[in-house]
Image (cartoon, rainbow, N blue to C red; front, side, top):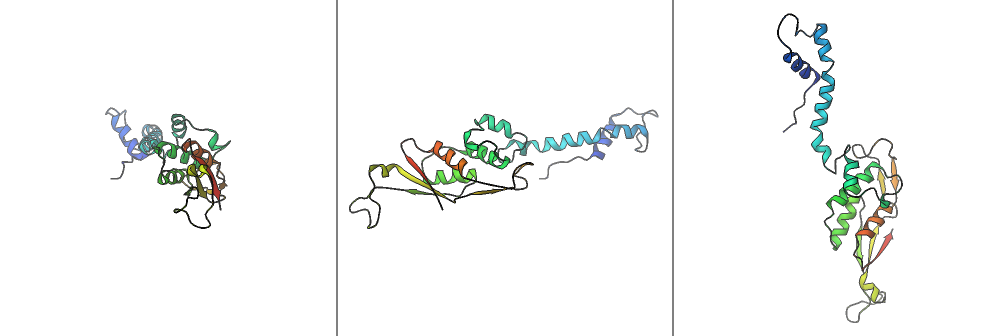
Amino acid sequence: MPKPSFSSADFTSALLGLLPRGRVWPKDLTTVHAQAVSCFAPTFQRLSDTALGLVVDLFPASTVSFLDEWEATLGLPDPCSGPSPSFQVRRNQVVARFTNTGGQSIQFFEAFAAGLGYRVTVTQYAPLRCGQSTCGQQLGGEDWFFTWAINSQLNTVTYFRTGQSAVGDPLASWGNAVLECELSAAKPAHSILQFHYS
């Protein structure tokens, strides 16, 4: 269902309809009085369009005006986002934090990284065990029970996207600092997390 949208002409007609009747209150659009009343119509149209966009703007994935409020609610910005993150990186971080339900599975960490804008895979390690391991596998000690790795591209590029980025954002930015910081904070405390880039 399309949302209702009112034009300046609709608001001018409504404002003129609210005026009293009589010769002193002409309703013809060519009169000076009607033209003076029509000066208010663009402001009402702008306010109406803003109100209609309010519901879309309240959701974290599509917010523009309320990004600062979402960041304050979720404890952002933090050191993970760096000194001057782009609008898109900030919004991705808000969405990832907001949708983060917690977990320790491979699927959870891959989905969390995807929410941040990174495509990753997870590798789990285990020490060599007779009867279970194969020839050529690394020996490793007991720490390998708790070691796992995030595999990602060396430089994940975030491109400027219309509708996702804001004025002043770079056309492209790259790096994995947000990925490393967020996943290091979300990992189980007893585990050893490595980052492997290719």
